[in-house]
Length: 69
Length: 342
Picture 1 (cartoon, rainbow over the protein chains, first blue to last red):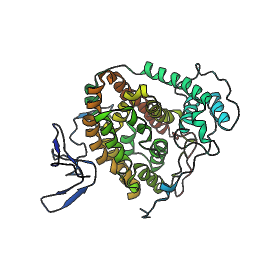
Picture 2: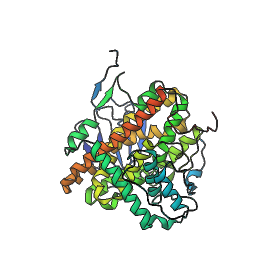
Picture 3: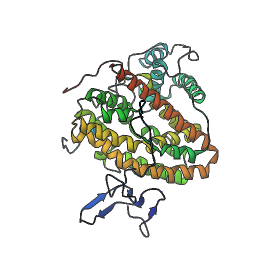
Picture 4: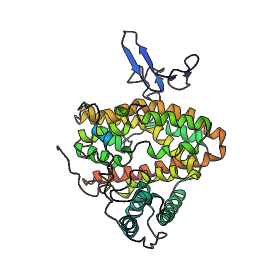
């Protein structure tokens, strides 16, 4: 459902840009990625393995060594 | 994937059979649902997370979802059964309140959930299935999860009328996505059912209740408990937040494990969808549900933390059961799985 007024894009501090409504994203090579979700999280940190869609790869990671380490 | 216009799962409305009792409590509930009188039982002395109490609660709650074959739907509001359910819930809830450390700092709780432990020292079911789990163990995992995922999002839907304003709208945004955003063929419960079929399992609602232990039932019972009690709406949101905040990386690990095991696209699609869906849901739950809920009702903070920690606690108990059994070379289920195409 298109929102009344301009498309709202929320730029988050730590991770993706949140775009309301279905979107089609065009990449530099011309590839188009369509998302039909009510909200789409577009990767901003470039770490996503599903770029341009956020996959939560921006999360802080803490390494835990094995018992022998 | 078998591309049919209308997957049979979407037409599936049959209620499951009543399960085999696992002790006096579940025996009393099952016998009453078969039409006998409700026997007096000693609830106070029961093991709160044990198979018997959890199956008894499961049966009481299922009356609010799909019901049971041959059981009058009106039994949902049988005052004697509701009275017993309340007694069972009190034992379960008291144990959780005692086992879970209280807190009321929701932002700190959320921040902790957003840190992703990595490396060889991390012990977890999805880590195990990514690295070295067998196809048989993956099937077991899916059978455990089926108790919830074949009614995915339903327990949290009880919370909708108990919230107001922005928090309600935010919760519905996520729920709408879980139910396929208006497209039944995208419902998460259907994607789960298609994965089950692909793995040679039954996608019939409740088909694996007999197989799963109390640890599995307890996780889902917590969802129903918090959803059905308005007084626990904060805990319901906390439980929901825990799932949405943690499932994206776990789903990615399961996708990798399933690829390693050579599973087909219909099997992989469920967790593949959740990598992206839950990366969005995390954001919507934090900004669109938790923030407005705590602004409107700051006194719910302790219950939100309780919901997060109680679901983590029960999730860890189930994870330990699975990994412990698998370490010993045993099944984590109460009986072996029959597989359609091994």
